[in-house]
Image 1 (tube, rainbow, N blue to C red):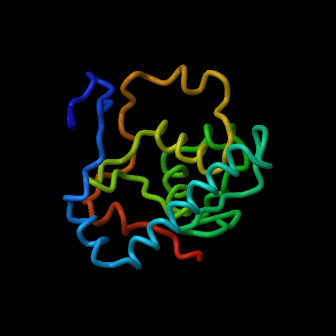
Image 2 (tube, rainbow, N blue to C red):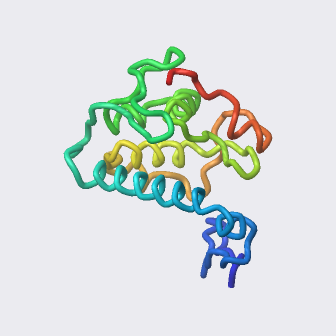
Image 3 (spheres, rainbow, N blue to C red):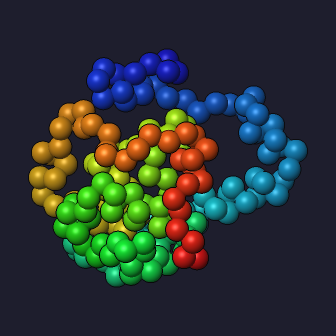
Length: 168
């Protein structure tokens, strides 16, 4: 079943992560420090997301953006004012969403092929990072197959290295 997809939404069915036979795990088996760092960073990430989702950040607004990769994001990055509410996120242009995502230390393009995320993916990533719910009807009114954002196509290397602000 690994690799089967469901129609136009391209949702993978029956996904099973690769077993210890893949190269990453062979590498990890030889280096306990990598495994410990993966566990530490994974735990911090899940804890931070859960505290944002279920902790003090309740309601449609939030105080700021913080991620493990970028730390606290300044109020303005590359001329773009960082959002403080779900409405701010939804009103942003594709370019502003991309700057905000990269300011948080995340990729605005698929790391595997450099294709830009669509605006709904970019918005949803920001909703998760800051722990707010989208406005009523925002996702329900989204097209079934939203087009990619107006961002340019990048290479895989550019997707993980280009356009990240040096504010931290």
